[in-house]
Image (cartoon, rainbow, N blue to C red; front, top):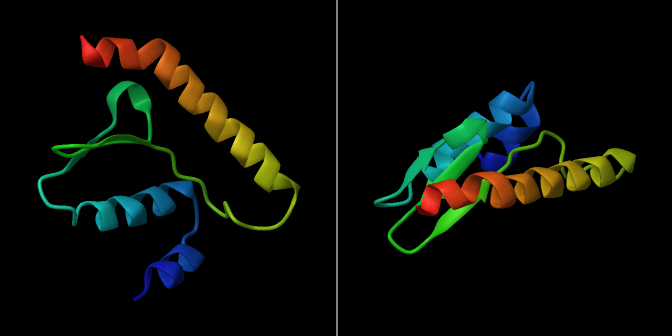
Length: 88
């Protein structure tokens, strides 16, 4: 089943998170953790990436704006308050 089909069949945001995590787990020598309750922190030898999963992210409606702002707010909060503890 394709990634697109899996995402279309997802029922909620947790399903979307699990679908993406299963795809990202295929990256060699990587790990995904959820420090401080974030959706995910992907770490490889050369990359650290904060993950945030949203259902229906790309639908063309007003919710796109709200989702975008919500994700930016979460990323800002993580970088400002949580990230400094991870690098020490």
